[in-house]
Image 1: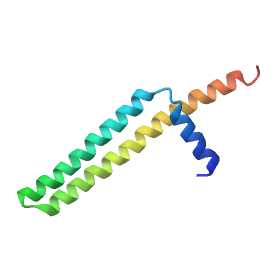
Image 2 (image 1 turned 45 degrees about the vertical axis):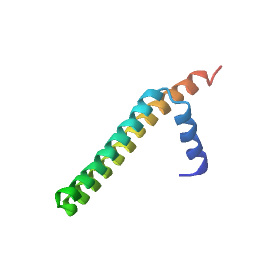
Image 3 (image 1 turned 120 degrees about the horizontal axis):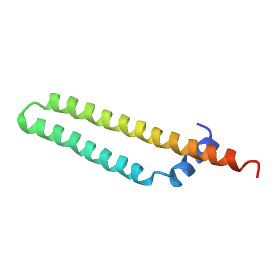
Image 4 (image 1 turned 180 degrees about the vertical axis):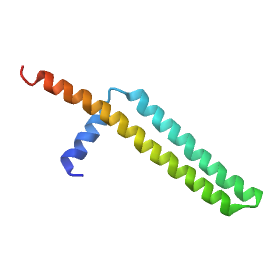
Length: 92
């Protein structure tokens, strides 16, 4: 991604129309990663560490992928609103 696009995404996220949704994404991600850690620790205490490591890793990857997807949805919504605003004020 070039620097201008990256800066646009950073600016879009800072000025989001959906700040609560973005906070919820962060909160749910933290809960999911904690759950993955609990699975790994629990598996070590139950005597099956390989299953726990694999399960915890899969949970962590799923949580991080869903975080990215959720951020993309919010970015698309924000970019759509930004584009609509720019096109409506372009002729003024």
